[in-house]
Structures are given as C-alpha cells and as structure tokens.
Amino acid sequence: MLAALALLVGLPAPAPVVAQRRAPSRSASLAELNAEVLRTTRAYRATLERAIPVQEAQVRDAFLALDEGKRLQAAGAVPASYVEQAERNLAAAQRDLSDTLTALEETDRILGEASLQQRLASLPPLPRGGFEDSVMLVRFSGSTPWSPADVSPLSRRFAAAFGRSLPISALGQTKVHDRLGLDHRGAVDVAVHPDSAEGRWLMDQLRRAGIPFIGVRGEVPGSATGAHVHVGPPSPRLVSGR
Image 1 (cartoon, one colour):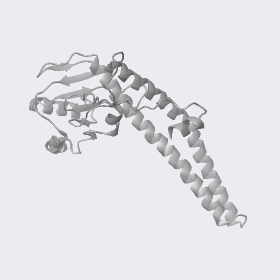
Image 2 (cartoon, rainbow, N blue to C red; image 1 turned 135 degrees about the vertical axis):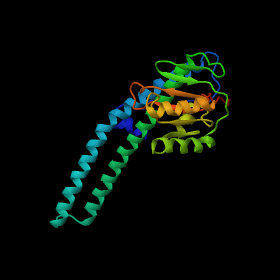
Image 3 (cartoon, helix red, strand yellow; image 1 turned 90 degrees about the vertical axis):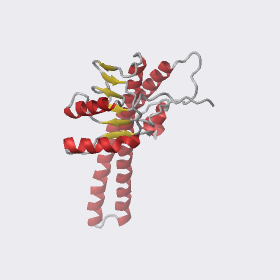
Image 4 (cartoon, rainbow, N blue to C red; image 1 turned 30 degrees about the vertical axis):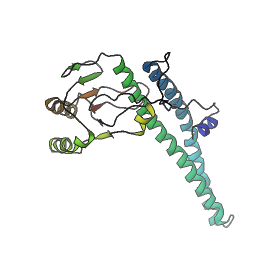
C-alpha cells in the first residue's frame, strides 16, 4: 500500500516504519534507534496526508461517474454492466481512502508511543514507590504485580464511578508495540487525560493499590494521539539477535 501511495502522490516510497528488532550496534544506542523510528514514521505520515486529498477526489469522481452511469442506463444508452463497473470503481476508491485513513491512525499511535519512549529514556528511573508529577508526565513506581488479566475489577469500579466502560485503548501487546519492539504484554493503556476527573480517579486507585503507572498529558505534536494513562510497568525494549 505504501508504494502505491507514493506513486499516487509522485514521491519515492519512504523507508518502512517498522522498527528493526535486532540488537543495536555499538554505534547506535536505543535512543538513536527510537529517534530513527520517529523520523521515518513522520515521513510516512506526511506521505499519507498528501495522499488523502487525492483519494478523496477519486471518491467524488467515482460517485459522479456512478450517478451518470445510472442516468444513462435508465435512458437505455448503456448496459447494466456499465453501472456495475462504476459501482466496483467507487468501492475500490472508498476502500483505498479507508485504508489510508486507517494507516494514518496507526501511524499516530506509533508516533505517540515512540515519543513517550523517547521522553522516558531521558528521565532517571524512579525508586520503588517513587512518585513524580511533571509538566508532561505523571509517574508512579509501584511494586504490586500487575497484568492485563487484572483489569476486570478496575473496570467494574470505573463503571460504577462514571457510568461507562473503562476506555481501554491497548490491552497488552498490540501491533504498534510489535513494530516498535516494545514489550507491552504486562500493561494496559486507558484513554483518559491524567488531569480529568476520570484520570485523577484512576491514578488515585492505582497508587493506593501500589500499581505502577505513567500518566501522559497532552497530544504529541503532529499527531492526533491523545493523552492516556499507561497502567503497569514501563514497556521495555524487546531486543533479539538474528
């Protein structure tokens, strides 16, 4: 899909956004690898953004062609197969646009997670039981074991307190974490702002229970990724040799 998008907007295909899951060389630190992921992902996102207006125009043109085909068929000027082909063309154009929008959403999630890892890498680790509330992050280094299997009681308490389901955006490992080479198997991301009533309630519950968390404030510049609370220990790198 990426190569096709690049051809569509008249650009060379950008480098893949997949993080290479191999041991870093001596000259490349994890911070440098993370910076490379951010660079290539931003380039990929820019390509997707340029493709969207082109594909939206193709959908509009396909709609007009279908309407015209139906009018001509009703007048007996074209066979039914003409309209059927126009319907297939419209479906293909809509599918291409949908695929691009989906890829853009996933790219934003990658940017958000990579930016978070870059931020965390610049901070000293918290001591056990340590708490820190900074401009961008709220961190708590609890010692209570946690896994996604433990989310049900928390979900029930959240629903009782706020009348809606716990807005989980990532339950354990996801494709985004696979692409970044991160081990998210022991964590859950909840789409609430740390400074909202729901976010404060959630972090208070976690801190009382001794469960580690990271509250992420604000959106990542250049993406639509929102703030969230990462429940569980920080996601370490999955580094495997080849």
